Amino acid sequence: MQDYELYYWGLPFRGNFIQLFLEEVRADYRKLDASEVYPDKNLNIQYPGMAPPYLYDCRAQVWFAQMPAILMHLAKAYHFLPDEPVQHTLALKVVLDCNDILMEITNYNGTVMWDEDSWTEFRTHRLADWMAIFEKTGQAHRLKPEAGYLLGSRLTVADIATAALFGTLVHSFPELASDLEHSAPCVASLCQRVEGRPSISPFLEKQRRELGKAYCGGRIEQSLRDVIR
Image 1 (tube, rainbow, N blue to C red):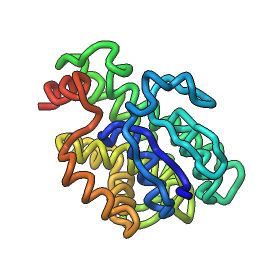
Image 2 (tube, rainbow, N blue to C red):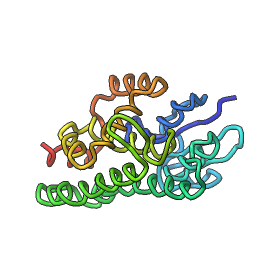
Image 3 (cartoon, one colour):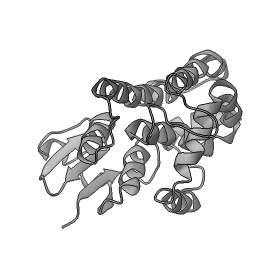
């Protein structure tokens, strides 16, 4: 029996948060297209979510939705939460921050498309502030450009989430790499180290070979590409 089934589109975006984790712990899972559940069968699952990703825990026979909830479930199962209990809350906060940034960078899930003025304002202020928030969190836990982790002395779900967020972003939009280096140099290095881990690197190489620079897809991604150019 497989450990998990992950339902998401053929894109990185929110799916990579879960896939990087599953790859790191070498879980036995299979990735299935979100259309097998969404939208027609979404309300038939045990605990529905509004949209993918969905994770089915085959052994527990439980469905999970919402990327942060899925990651925290996996983090508990594989002991990928920080050692100190108070840091568990910080780990959740990091994952929720990641989810907020995904919403904001897609202009609230595509509520409106980006124009050059609104994008420039967001990139210059809000996105830079988000990057600085992650940098300050890491520095509070002795994260250095060449070593360390976001919340302490070992790899946790917070590091994987951070790499899934910013690593994917700067791969899909290389123009933003200098933004991350400027606002969060230690975080930029952390993302590279996580992406280079032996358990994660082969997955990313294969995915990026197949998907190229794809990010979130559709009109939202095109809107981002138009303004970033």
